[in-house]
Image: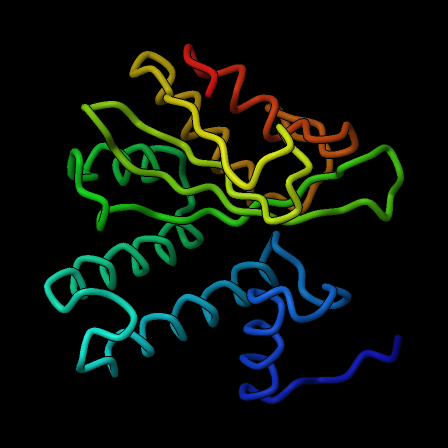
Length: 197
């Protein structure tokens, strides 16, 4: 593959095609500064789409501002430098409000082969005063379903915030998980939970 510099329009087009599963990912990374740049562009594109939606095509008009704030929080997560900032973001989520969330893109291996890298998303929100983590995977490799969820107990929130901070690391080996082991990142989230769903 020949590396080339993409214009902003081409970059948005590439991200949209990846998001809609219209092409294989051979150029976009989910971690480090490059990952931060890609996801800032992607979520800002979503925000612009919602802001220009004047007839409730994408979301209900009454939910639009809250969802825009949630997408901005998603960008803020990528910018957070300390686990304490992430914990504060989780603490400030409104309880039982489906418009109040943030999304965390994550990457991991699906087998021991180096080329088996896969990206999916975590959706973080509060339900019944508990932090809920929904693991969304269009490939259905983990737990053989599109989505599964766990609740993180309050006594694990500091640890979980540190764990989330590490998901942005470019390293395959972190204090909290080993990206070389298949599904290690997701398995460790399940291990933090006291309920497996």
